[in-house]
Length: 80
Image 1 (cartoon, rainbow, N blue to C red):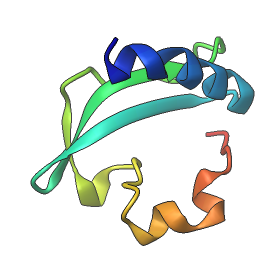
Image 2 (image 1 turned 45 degrees about the vertical axis):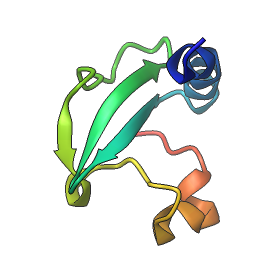
Image 3 (image 1 turned 120 degrees about the vertical axis):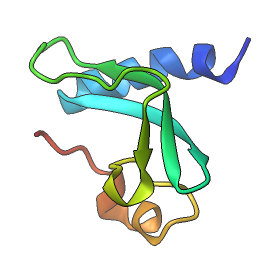
């Protein structure tokens, strides 16, 4: 079982709880590459395609080593 298969149901649960979307990505040099996404059933948000690369500076994915990820507010649900 790979990490995407393990994470998918947990991401869906979090997306439903937040009434939003949850994405997982990996760092590739100065980019974040989306490897999995899930959204709540509201159908309002669009999800990035798997494999989409976004500059880290424009990404909303917080890397565990980043100061943003360590702040408690970065882990709270936000409805957009």
